[in-house]
Image 1 (cartoon, helix red, strand yellow):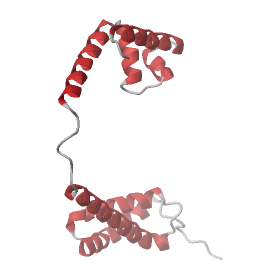
Image 2: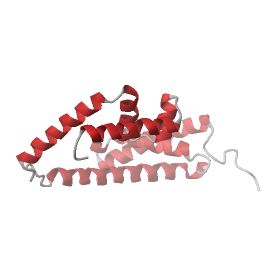
Image 3: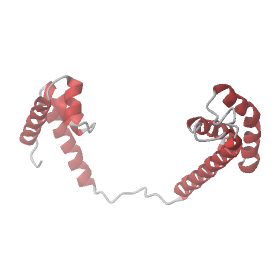
Length: 171
């Protein structure tokens, strides 16, 4: 049983030849089937990227079928995405809220108290606290970022929480 010279399309020269041979046909296929609004050039590029990512799995004889199938699926996904976007844009959106003005005023006052309380924290406490609460970083990530131990980070965050509780009633 003779073995093919090229079992897969991972060789750069062969891949380049495949691109030159099939890219225009693939572009025309997508363009004529779905139109220009889904950007057929992008779909061709994405199809070839997927072929390159899967070059060990795709034999040379099936490369063309693989490209056309992938490009077709990408185009269908784009059309589906566009229809979802259109439905969302046509949907009814609430311009009004049920929030009363008193709540908005309380929220602004609370935010002001919070900002004042944050400004009274030490810089180390404020940095550790904000990295944890606003950016969602874990204690170990903050420790690595600041070059300190995890326990030091915990102490700074819990110290900040205590001071904030004292400064702002109702937390």
